[in-house]
Length: 239
Length: 239
Image (cartoon, rainbow over all chains, first blue to last red; front, side, top):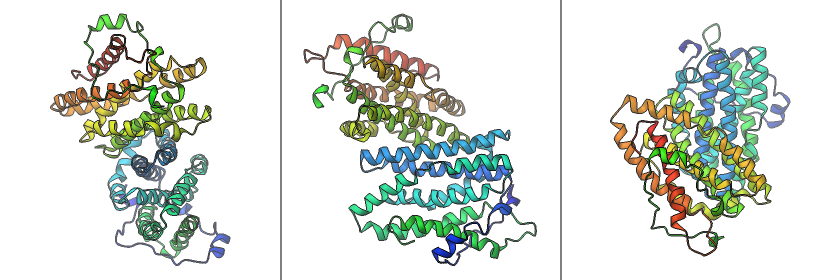
């Protein structure tokens, strides 16, 4: 399966940021359909990343500073498991054991997880918020390149509630209570973007000529970052 | 709410074990209905304990030694969250915020959780298996003492799959692969029973005369332990 991917672990695409208006007008200008990997490669990675997002959220639940925060974030953890199970069900539907499809990508994704693990509740909460936002956005776009049936079912999966608003509420309350958190969390959020775009990028299919078309990729990643920036704006943080 | 409980943190009921046959013939001889606390006390504790069971399972998922073990145990974690949400929904139904109903018991239950946290994946897996088995059994029996409507709904909740078989499968495979685990896990399992019966016992309602009727309680706990012994037997471990 290795040749589905090109790997350049030392390079990250760092797109130029466009103005928000320009971006909003062009959301569907470039899509990822032609870069979508084979179905099992897509599902194995997406399902395993969703498990990793769940693990981050479970850590958020376990270390929550109050029963109310624990209760709210446990609902987000449940949603992340539902999403994982929907992806695993698609793997089963193809006649493959979900664990087998995921195991091919577990080492790389586990290394990613280590890099984006926060030092405390707040950082883990931001990590869950930022990485699930970026990755859900990315895999939602990528799904459009799959066969019609599964593309339709996955569109429903990715349109379902991912608990974003509940996390936003927790983060807003935390920053309101301790405004000094804002700069630390903004810095941490910036660090997460690079690693997350790299893990997303390595999921893309090798183009036929064997070389990634950077010029073609750039606007895709620019759009992912623009959506990320809007999510951080909603928190009052600078992306 | 404190006077719903009597507290004797330094004493544990240690029932004599009867023979299996005797026990099986008398499963319903004593029930916990008269000892059932008020509805919100019951729900607050049961819902928070279910969250703690989820946290243990999430730890099992995060530290699983293989992708297959991670996938299997994540399904159990999802079931534990569903059960928690069903209990939280009953709290909401009574017009109370779930976090408020749970917060009264969080300190005591968090201390319990610390005591039953395993040192590695195997111990955390056994802890999830043993404590969820005992606590689900206990709260299922206690639910019979609640008002008819909620008692019926909770009977359905407690009859739903709690993932016991999936955990059993993981534990069996682990012990088969490394038979030296058996004695360590059996000893750890014994340690868990005392703490778990204590946290269960502190949930019972104060009898009208103000004194716990130890003679009445003993057979109840004997039955809980007999069911626990059968679960460990299924693993080939001595309870």
